[in-house]
Image (tube, rainbow, N blue to C red; front, top):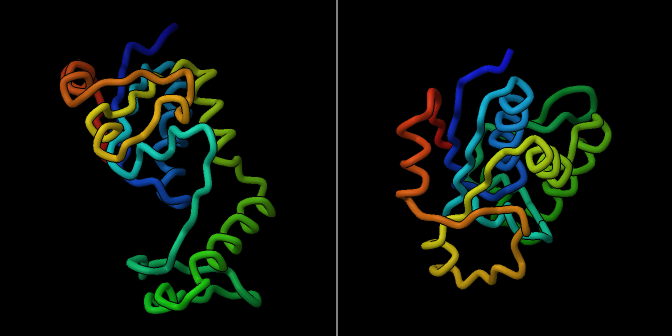
Length: 161
């Protein structure tokens, strides 16, 4: 029996740590027969590029804790200002993801495509950031706020991430 529910997700952030929630929620909902529409705008739009180079930083992320030496170390916010720290924290996060067997964003994206999750790239943001469609995934749709609203007004669940 199909679940007649639907969900929209507005994706506004494009860092490694912020890429996981929308894709995990979308693929989980799709597996539960929820019709999912994701609208990628501003920095979230980068998650639809064919080639991803995602990073994570301590700057502005005071809740960031990393497992170290049998405990958890809070990463000081000001560490993000030190040259090379974004690369280091990104490497640490990617290593932890790999060690724990967590799916990559590329894998989650592919799962979303295979699960018929509708991914919409914000055309205004494409124009604003001078993105070339040739660099974007082939399976996405392009639209604006009205496209998202058409889906959101009919949806049971609307999320902003």
